Amino acid sequence: MERNELFDLAPVRYEDGALLFLDQTALPGAEIYEKMETAEDVWDAIRKLKVRGAPAIGVGAAYGLAVVTRGKAEDLAGYEALLRNTGEYLITSRPTAVNLAWAVRRMLRVFGEAKAAGSLGSVADAEALMLAEAEKIRLEDVAACKAMGEYGLSLLEPGMGILTHCNAGTIATAKYGTCLAPIYLGQERGYGFRVFADETRPLLQGARLTSWELSRAGVDVTLICDNMASIVMKNGWIDAVVVGCDRMARNGDGANKIGTSGVAILAKEYGIPFYMYVPTSTIDLDTPTGDDIHIELRDGDEIRTMWYEKPMAPEGVKTYNPSFDVTPAKYITAVITEKGIARPPYTESLAAIMKGGAE
Ligand code: MRU
Image (cartoon, rainbow, N blue to C red; front, side):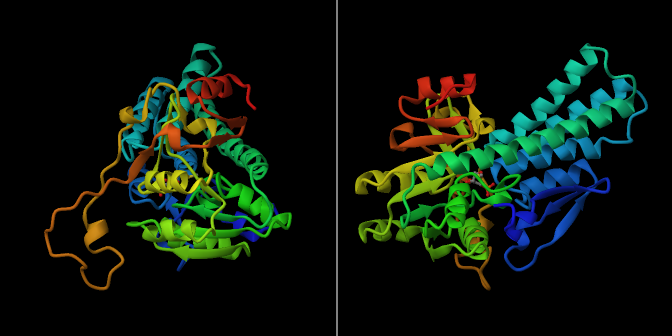
């Protein structure tokens, strides 16, 4: 897969001491990298979805934390306070994707452990440790996506029609994607998949990002509006649904981009397997069920005016714009992680995965 130039477009890059985020709001029109210099830059980029997709947000936040706190403290106590305050601030940028809080808390934990072990002699030591941990998080995500690609492909057959929602591709992760990883792998191995990409209202991650990513990789992709999922299933064109996840609760309920739960319910009606790709960094055993997941609400102008040449709704009309919904575990045929494939009952299988064992 490495040879595909699409994978050179990393959402988060650290080069010559500078942190760069690919501005995903400019895609597919332009490939622009923006330099992140302050905590506000990083917060804003996450909030505005310049960097987006649960794993990419985690990687971006980890690097952001390491980079924007650098060179600002005179002693270790000052550095620790800055690190903790900046981490807590970054977490507030988006509430649903658990990878954000997971990555920040991991950075703070690693700092705390090194401090307790007496291995931090100076602020420079601590800064180097934080940068190294961010890189570790990035590399672990690359490996996780690669593994999910292999596990995921084992569930698919050559020539299948596959429906996906939102974008859980290479730019939503450190590399390869979660649910698009098996598609890329299949492409390389001559599987000849036919992919249908939901456009994914209101922010169009499916139209702007998934259909762009897949076309660039030479995958046969057809863009459809969200309300066309049922007809393509009824037509017999879909053999499997693959989606990503922003936070999976202990019982297997999974929050993902708004509209995912409707696709899952349709898939069940048409007898189509529904696969959710969930790296372990997205599994949150501290959240008992989907009802306990905080769903991000966004500005109504994303529905009223965004993307249109002129407003497509009366000015000031009330809106409801949840960014995610929760797919109940009962609609999820299998959960693909980097440690293996979990099947229902998820309370048991996810706990086993998190301990290291899997199918
Ligand atoms: O609002 P977004 O674009 O960050 O939402 C992204 C999704 O819902 C993805 O499907 C999910 O994060 C998985 S990305 C590998």
